[in-house]
Amino acid sequence: MSIIEIKKFNLYYSDFHALKDININIEEKRVTAMIGPSGCGKSTLLRSINRINDTIDDVHTLGAINISGHNIYDEDTDVDELRKNVGMVFQRPNPFPVSIHENVAFGLKVNRIASDKRVINEMVEKSLKAVLLWDDIKDKLRKLALSLTLEQQQRLCIARVIAIAPHIILLDEPCSSLDPVATRNIEELIIKLKEKYTIVIVTHNMQQAARVSQDTAFMLMGKLIEFDKTEKIFTNPSEKETNDYVSGRFG
Amino acid sequence: MRHFDVEMSDLQNQLLDMAGLVQKMIQTATEELVSRDPSQIDTVLSLEKEVNIQEIIIDDKCLKLIALNQPVGADLRFITSAMRINSDLERMGDESLNVARMSLDLIKYPEIKPLVNIPKMIEIVQNMIIDCIKAFNTSDSELAMSVLSKDDEVDALRDAIISELKTILIACPDSDTVQRATDLMFIAKSIERLGDHATNICEDVIFMVHGKDIRHPRA
Image (cartoon, rainbow over all chains, first blue to last red; front, side, top):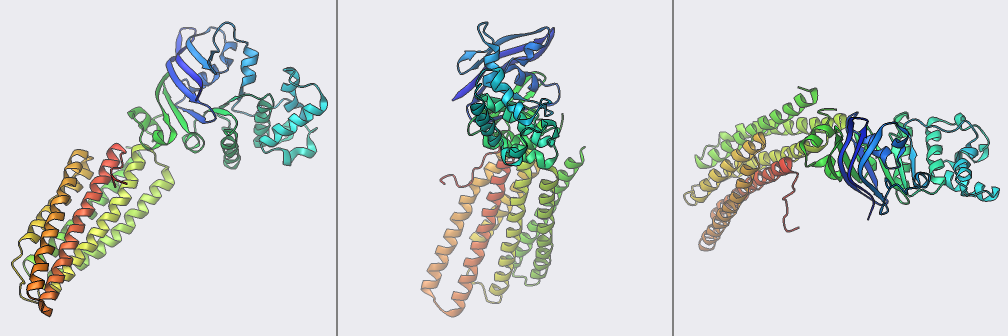
């Protein structure tokens, strides 16, 4: 079942036409990877799914992105609610300069999801367990989040998103600042998280897209060239441009 | 040209060289049978050693190409097809050696009967092999498809040969006749297997070009 339906979606940065007539149906509880050379529009498209692009001046869009049947670009959309439902994790881990506990509890408090200390503690524990971080840090929850390793910081950022119970998690090159072991660990986490969440990941690492995703979208110069099952994209893509890109002949 | 593309081109050339060796083995082994010339087996034996070495070299090259380049798409299909074609070519070499060994035994005796269907089988199989190698070299899936239908002709000739030999055996079941008929049956079987390997190569070419697996259509 499609949870995200992107329909004839266009995005302009002032006069620059960054996304051109994108049509994709993203299935629930699957990992969808977006690949393509730098500047192809994959991050712009990802950021359009929770309207983070709204923060940039002169951005305007045409077409629709329906999440659970509702066009998030309709005027009546509550953007705060949207971002609770569609969480985002960025390239570099960006924990707040407060304690590990406070990082996860922050969203719960700000969004008034919970105020009772005991409930918050339970939700923090649950979120940290979901990202397989709890056992490592349960005795140092009051320590500064910035004292964690980069991998742990990225797990913490995912826990922060999970705490406010989204349905969709957007990952913008979540492993690009991590070493190979940490990358593999985060990939294992992504595979596990898909049991509960719909995940869309932008990655420059094609092997990563092949390892973690079930569906892959290949984009080039603002256009969607091909969207199909990941195994098809990496074994027998329909479009020549896709084959050339995944086999490293350009980009 | 990228280093990887040069390596892929080398792989293709190595397979074509190996195919050349196998074609020579088949030609020599069948000549030994048809012209009753026992000296030919030495050439077949020496070619077989070369083919076996080539198989190992090509397999090693394919493994390294996969491990070091993580190929995908058409490149991945080419390498996996190359590995299967490599294995089929080596088996073709083995079948040619079987033909040469059986022929060496057979030509010790006078002819049980003039060879009629076996030369026909040989001609069809040799053409199948020429075409399957050409199809691989030029990524010509239509040519590969056309080879597949010829396998039925080879099977029919094998059945005719075995049926004819059974009739001879029933009529004259002495030990010399049994020996010669059995040798000829094994030879027919080996030539038919050469045709099967050629069809396998054609199936690999179709997979390589279109990503479509047409093996075992009723599976």
